Picture: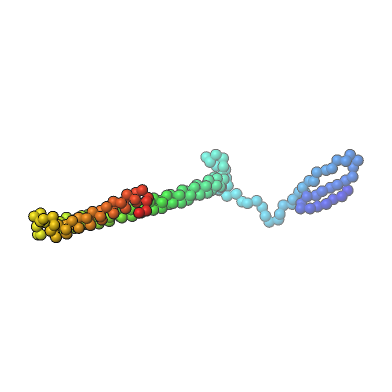
Length: 168
């Protein structure tokens, strides 16, 4: 008979004619001195109104469910923050384009108002309406009109090219 003991398992081997080997059987553990089972407290008792489970079992279940809920909540919050940031950027771009268009419109209105004021001055104070085609006052009025129209045409061409994405 051969006996070997390793990690609490005793293996016994005997020579027999049948050729059958015996399964290793764990050795019985002696109770440890001074250490007993964990004392059962009021949270360990099974409660019939909690489906026969102890409060510790329910707390364990709730903690296992709370972790995925917290992860999903944080993920949703991050996604929502990203969406808000994209929305803010789009709004800022739209506001910038609107401000640029408003500035161009104000500039065009100022040019047109200046032209109207100049023509009014020429008509009222310099007798443009009674002048002859070869008079100097007519030449001044013609040059102001052509200059204003060139500015307007350049603005229209730039606007058209910008809408078609053509660089003039």
